[in-house]
View (cartoon, rainbow, N blue to C red):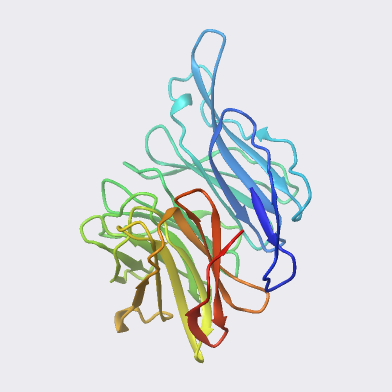
Length: 320
């Protein structure tokens, strides 16, 4: 279901609109590129007439808000239907580079990483094995302003990391991070030009880690409750700041802000104190103000908005 602001900056909302999901699809993920097209990915398990289980990754897109989705279609599977590995293909995660090319990542049957992406004409290229081992589900994928895609994967071994050297280039396996991450708790954010920082939960502490490709790992606290955080950059009181929001161990949103790339200076965390289901989400509205959205325990969506674009103060909650 989707709600949309009636005007940039609100406060009134339109909706909900129902986006149809065919039966049998699960683990839906959505990614958006600079052209604003929305790409929907999903996992589907089906059975052949002989009872053998098969797995498909499904895909559709929406060209602009308010328009219907295209028909769902299969992205195929890197394994043949007769291969016992076919049903063990993992859940899809997507990223769109600045050229508008969709890349789809999935954990493979050997618990490494597979990639499939479009070519310049929009046709899908063959699946590519990026290797890796002992990966968990729950990839973290980010795109820089110059279009380079980075991937962080939690593993039973040190966390794996892949990065494109240039827009449209091959994915290179970079040096592993000597950390153990809680699977599915990561988010990527560009914190300096063409450079990503990954924020993910540390399996051996009660906090989040800030992880940079140069090998820097900083503990930043936050008491995450097992879901991925949401992240954005904005200016607060004249400072370039990073803002994170996630569901805490007590079940309510935790909201934090700090000077971008200066996590070691400290993070100001605040517990919203209103229970939610799943992970809260952050966005900037048309006036540059922070908007925090969540689903309450009764299933209703709520939003709160920054009271002033210059100060980090949130206003009243509004039920959509």
